[in-house]
Figure 1: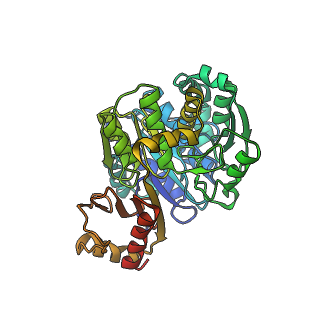
Figure 2: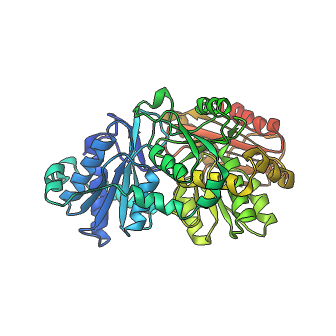
Figure 3: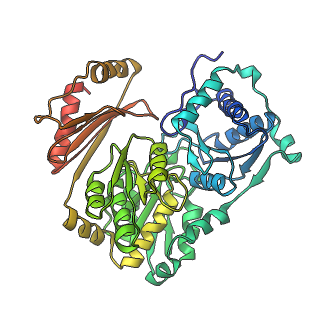
Length: 474
């Protein structure tokens, strides 16, 4: 039996390459999924497999397909690197029981991983991933069955496809291409050396935008940065937008399910702002109705807006599978998280940075307003909330000690005012009477403790973070 256990986190299974992300463990994960599909009555089904631009992603996709073929399944392999949302779309479009993408999303370059998708193109929830883990635990590496990739391809067991056109067309049918064409927008794109450039460029050029692209070459080290669209990482895009007088700068993370945006003045827009903008646009300008969904670390300005428009904002734990499930349950207009992932009703029930970007471009075209003008319109009506966050590397011993302190002994820092409510469903979140809040929680994808806060002033939010640091000795 292997020494290290394979455990899924909030965004699939991720591990350091050559440590836990190995050919042996990849084969075990896929074999575990095959055994689960057998139990669920999906024997012989077609399963979509895609991959991003990370080191070993293509090879890992082929290893996954070999195991699927070995267990009698029919792998449908996307034959070039592609956005994760494209894989999810294909699972939904072809009504497949499962799919997977080889990606570690926005993690550092030393990571890779596997995201599993269920029927409808949704992120596999905790129930499904736990069942896969249970099947993995029953396996020994030497028991895993497989069929050589080239042999399976020659026999027609493995099929290679590239459903690019279908995915692009599915987005174009949702946006007002005519309005965008009339607006003559100039948009800069930063795929962060990832997989979004072809899709974003095609959509925007079809809508007659003037499109410039930076950082589009294949670089498995992502230019020496994490492929996450943070304010620091998007400084080159910000400068490009200012230098070239673009209307908008758009960035996506490594597998294109998360979005980062630079406004017309070169300012970075926090994902909280993007969620608020899109929800406001869809309700106020498109005339949609319905609730929104956010995770427990995302802005409560959504709650204010929803209440004003007679809607509800639902809070769920971190992990987009929780957002997807609540969106389906409530027919929500939009769901998202403060890390840049968002989904909009009518498309896939998962994060799609490419679709969200297309809607933002439509927003500018339809309203005739800049991003900053639209956000000012929102804050004049609903006020401003200020956000702060941080993360701290954890050893296993330190994590166990903090878990004991926060969740067994129930010890809390003194924030100067009593909390109206404490929620320990996912981390430890405190809600205060003035509408401010703060949370600390352990990451489900990296060895980190994350803290976040939102206040009525920036100093209030940052003081909540300083209090966590002092109390937990971070």
